[in-house]
Image 1 (cartoon, one colour):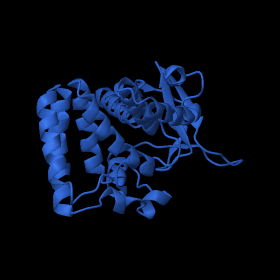
Image 2 (cartoon, rainbow, N blue to C red):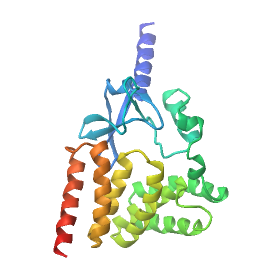
Image 3 (cartoon, rainbow, N blue to C red):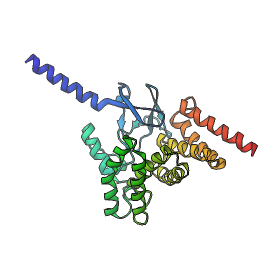
Image 4 (cartoon, rainbow, N blue to C red):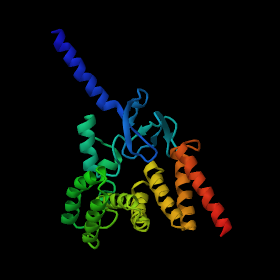
Length: 267
């Protein structure tokens, strides 16, 4: 009996950790570990939350991304909001054991945009992405770029850039180009992705800020100073809200913006 109680307690602890732990991310929002933050675990979910969580090392900060009314509940997103309502609900049901009834899910907000284009074409893209992500994890950049570009070319006239699977392809192709020092092509793909980021991350969001920073760095490197200044300015305006003015990434953007302004002054 004691052994059974111990086993049951262990299983319960595993469930509690799974449901309440947070992925610790670096400055570019890449997962680097997991951690337990008991006070943050009390926050409920919304697919259009009024707060975001930002890491600086292991330190987790909760920041409001829009005006919050008195007595309004603070919410965060437990899942990637760059997914359809069906996918978000499925993930939340599987991971956290509840059916999301937020406004975005019940109205299927932006689902038509996310799945825009010819269904057979974007279904093929969706099914291929895990393979491409495996190439990315193995740093097989030439293969990743070749396959991503072939898929993007095939879908040019039938699936728009706002489709979430094309957007994921653009992100993968950008990563491959940067790793292969093809910065002109990386910038082309990055600029295409930015419009969709603007559509789906309408509130200030770290993901859009990081994408703007990435595009700004490419523009800066290629000598497109006015464009880079615009991208860094947009990234800074978002990060002031999502990260705060003292965060290391906000300071990096501020430094890049100052460099651009100084270089433009000498042109």
